[in-house]
Length: 136
Image 1 (cartoon, one colour):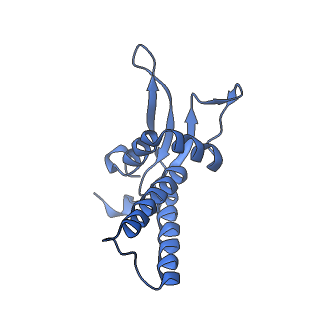
Image 2 (cartoon, rainbow, N blue to C red):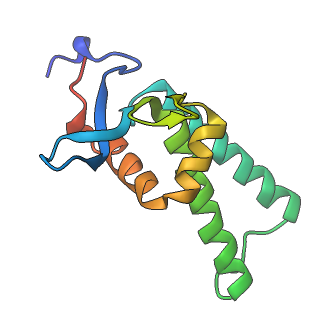
């Protein structure tokens, strides 16, 4: 690969369908950018800063040997995944809100992903699979 062809922020998208019709055609899903995108990198950086500040305010890292500490780490991972999913969805298709096409905004995506956490998992898995996004 010619290193001069690498871009700073890869903006190509991939389709992440979550429902299909009887013929196997996707009916609802998301268009997402990948882990080399500015959106992904910014979401991860923002989340990492929040976590560093949280540990700094506590004065210590969570004690993962306790139920409370382990729960803190798991919840932080869930918040990170949600932040990545929301940041990387550029648009969605097939979803409506009161009969109108639904917008892929923070509020809508948070609601959708909290009600369908497996969809969030599909989105983040697709985002982090570099093979889904051609370099350019």
